[in-house]
Length: 64
Image 1 (tube, one colour):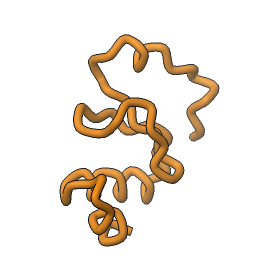
Image 2 (cartoon, rainbow, N blue to C red):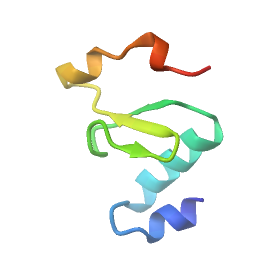
Image 3 (tube, one colour):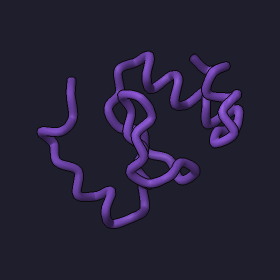
Image 4 (tube, rainbow, N blue to C red):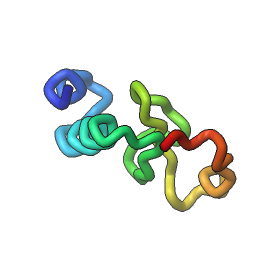
């Protein structure tokens, strides 16, 4: 998966590793300053940790 993401021009090497790890660990949300706010990457949604919109995450939308 990481190689597929890294081959995509939207991802840098390390960003691809973070998204791949979050996907493998079944994380619903990945907080990152580098990824686009609110963008869905497969099963992982990227949120910016310092934007107000990220603070309003509905706990019911998070899957265990």
